[in-house]
Image (tube, rainbow, N blue to C red; front, side, top):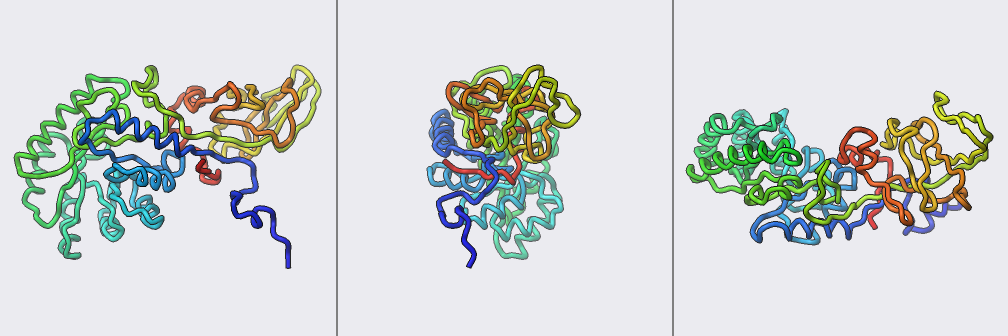
Length: 386
């Protein structure tokens, strides 16, 4: 009988062999959720957005933590596929599918898995009504209203009024929610207020028709910047993970980053001055140097754009990336780091000693937003809940 590897013998160890991982702090996640709840009026419901694998943080585990904490209406996901993953993981709470239901015949799959779809057209209503009659049960949905985002949703006022009249005369289906989405809640309060005013008009008309539903509009930026956006429910996303939706202003509430990304030095070498590192010879040492290799590359979601730009943390000190980032590995200039050795922990995002690499720092170097940084971390990187 073959001897088992150490990880198989010790069931408490994570089953991965390449020393690169993401740590997700559930206590910080729950702290952020609590802070957001405290910011709302007492009767405002919360729909945590845990789409895209929880913005790259590990969706299923964080959904379970949010449910365990209590006081949430449900969770928001981007697609039927994501919703099915949560159901298969044993999650029974309300799941709102925020994405388009096209092709519309897939609404039957949403019904089978007890997922609440978003409806954005008369055709969608008709398909859902037909399924309701076929299955012999009143199917629920949320109506999406476009007040200025320009993505999906029935256009506010005229188109929305027509479709609401149809809904009021379709007793076989039930609109349990109606929502819109802000385009610039992080940067333009005036435009956001215009969107809110448009949506409030539609809400008023729907209530005049006798419809009863939850109205919701606010993402993280909206709910923080204007309490009038809270309505019946809010949809916090990026704030749950402690990342800021605001590019140039600070939060009104203190939230904690949830994610750290770590790896280890797997190779170390001393090289002379004039030594070239990585593809394209874009990094040439100007002195005798120590170069470390870590098993992280652009296939893991650490962007090639960060080549020769970003820093990492080794033994509590900032060290620059040396040369181009490759698919599975990258090199660091660790010259001058006392005692550096193979196996030393390297922090790509997070804190080590007194230094911190923030997700926003990497986003700025890539001319993007923090959302993309965490969402881009490959699924081949293990997420460890700590």
